Length: 389
Image (cartoon, rainbow, N blue to C red; front, side, top):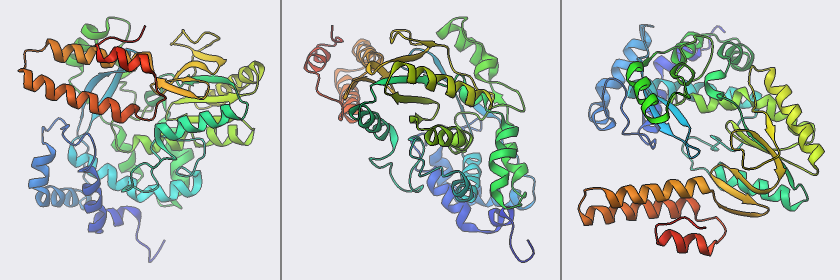
């Protein structure tokens, strides 16, 4: 590689890379979520020259160290806990810079951004908005297209504990490093970006027990295994998740399966029930080779915890209820919306503040579900603060 700079040298010496990484991090939706150092985006932005200079100095000295991440517990629409680990802003800048350096070679090998089966985290470029062909609605439109072409049976599933279960050694050795043309200069930094501890575990454990009972274990949500997992909240996790599942997608598509995947959630549209059962078996086989698992299947759409194999009638996928070629907000999302309305109404805030919060909530709901099919009774009852019967 004589005469050619390594990726690490580019990271250290190209001001544009760190600057671009910072600009992109500053525009992220979670921009106000600080890490354990409690430095907010506004403070980082005010002192950006100092902070970015310090990042470059540590990288050039080859002694950059990632901080612990701040853990947080969110609640999914299905009531399950969703663990999030929030990095400091300076660590996010370095993660984004790493992504900028490796995304093109990874895409060249794994076809990440033009994968017809994958709809999550696949912007055409980092500065573009997700267009109509990607994101949740791209996935839903693809499902509807398959259904309208006669594929009326579905396998709907999600990969159990996906992000914490990714074999990181396999990820890097088999999927990432072979794409970097023998340049191993970033290897150590990439691995260290994921080998971080979660702060405040004891507090998180108390919160988990109080909010979700004894059903879930903190070590399953925030594992400390050095070999496993890419933590949710890392800027690199979306790219790595798509890299890890790229050959899963490719194999299924080449074998003729109508796969629609959004991160670890997926649905396959089939002609018959037997075809759907075979599709489930094939998925389980392919994922097992990666150390990943699916839930056992059920033929009932009411069993939310299991893989569902059923006709495409009243199947929940990505927070939406799919009924053939029609799409509505899911019951879980409606219930969550009503609860939020009730919480605002019961709060001790002034009437004007309540009305402002309700306006924001209604606008957010309308933006999220504006493309669903009209359901007169739903909106009539929501105006009354009640879910439809």
